[in-house]
Image: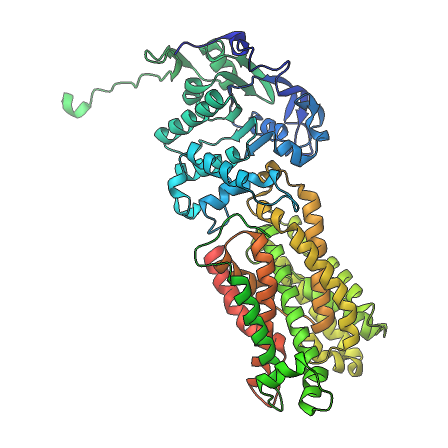
Length: 289
Length: 334
């Protein structure tokens, strides 16, 4: 697969709107004290997989919470379909934007199908009850996230990766154009992480949804991102397509990481290899004697 | 109400069976007493009342109010407990353990005992104010503790507030023994002494609390998965918490005004209900109301039969059953 670069994400005029669905304008946000994230502006490309990376405490999760209106902005604006997200009724936002928070916990004994059905919450009300349409959305979401075979089992019985796929099915069932996922891959085996990212890329590419993910693993981010955002100290330090952003200079600047960036011969994607000081070779004395 | 899923083993007949079981408990509750009245006579008295028959008069005038009381108080406390557990995501939350019951009864004791105000119209309101203040104190103490209002911190704060208020009640009762002699039984949680007048004034509180609880149930299910998840799904969390607090306080106030502090009902019943109907509060709330009513009806019969002809306070029996279950929950859920 050839990487599209710079403005290449915007080269599909059929699917593009005038402006991206989610835009950040000078957004500052924190937890009551001094803002953690300061003056961040970002256009989230539609129909693509955007990955936020950054060292611990860089504000990437805080920024995501602001995008999902969990945190109120101290200053600036976040626009959803052109309107400030804080001014829209929360249920209306939930029909356009879904959030999977970090380390979500399912109540004990909740079955997979029941969890996924929660995704239909914003489409229901006291008057508008469960319908055929809701049931279909739940089935489709379970199929897409490959959890249909566990439908009747309690979520707590499943492995970490399977459980995470159930939560992704829940946000898929919400049928929103925008999906925000806060560290969905943390604490999972590499193989499970890769499967999960493949699922998210499929969602972005095949269904044309806009997906934003906070990730820890740099190489996983580089392998899957369409658009990569590097944060440090509450600001965006580098942003763009992976080829443009994922280089040794940025890794040193943002992460303080001394690494060589090489290219995966199969995918053409960049891969970072941290530079390790060669171990000092001692000739064992005993052997020498 | 249409629900998305039918659980295996819970057919559409279940609500009918539940109502039938509670009705049976209701009739049994009425039939038991100093003079045992056969079940069919109880049913006759309720369905075609004949004032010429002595048994019918006993059923309708003497025993029916107490059965209604037991059903109401049980339903109120069970629903309040279910809501508190869902909203705080704390399996041990309950009006008794988090200090609402003792706060409400303390307020009633002060107003009745010290200010000599006995108007039945005001008692539920006084109880509600007491419940809110005690809940605020418990939450404030817990939130100020290192680590914040974690489940165990809340329970410790509840225990502290409870001990403090109980001591104040004791002091007050020593100062005015005569008035407090009448309140002594009420303070242990009793269904024996309530007047129909209080019942009339507690009923609107009960009704309002139950309606709000049923209305927010769907959102409580979302909140039980964590605050961020709930916001993501489009829940207005602040509004939901305010409405839930109102429902819990109204239900607790109604229960306390009628029967004094009846501990552990709000803990035992919702947990039992969850085992049967799962985690969806659209089911948990109505089933808790039904099961709570049935539970307290049966407990009240036990309280009267256990050491007959001596009657034990119903609240003592709920505590005897509830305390071991509390210990079990601490060991398995925390």
